Length: 126
Image 1 (tube, rainbow, N blue to C red):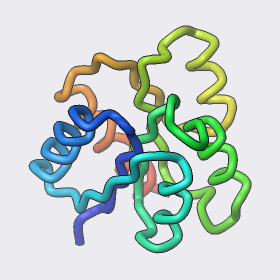
Image 2 (cartoon, rainbow, N blue to C red; image 1 turned 120 degrees about the horizontal axis):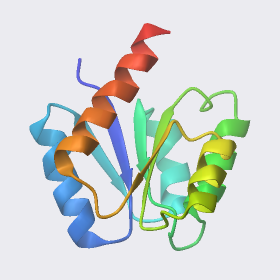
Image 3 (cartoon, rainbow, N blue to C red; image 1 turned 60 degrees about the horizontal axis):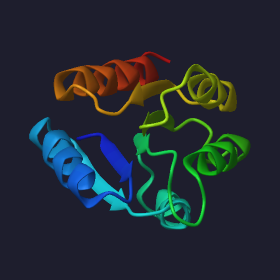
Image 4 (cartoon, rainbow, N blue to C red; image 1 turned 180 degrees about the vertical axis):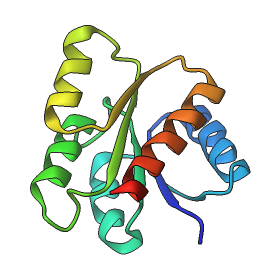
């Protein structure tokens, strides 16, 4: 069974490329365009991994991350922050709040696919 990946980003061009990239690598892909939509979808689709932008309408990615980590039903979900906010303090904040990894935009598609595989294999090892 393919892993489920939820892409949470409001930039259409990034969503299209990530959707294609993840589907091409055999993942079942779902999309949320903002933080609220992500929080509504997650209990329904139960993703294995979330690619989460920081700057989102309604709720920031940091807020979504905090809420997911506080809930015992979602705290196990792997989360990769995928964002243009690549300053050290942003990365530290994301990791401190519980992100499994932090990838800055622009990113290498090959490196992102490797990070997704690595993060999911860590989840399977536990």
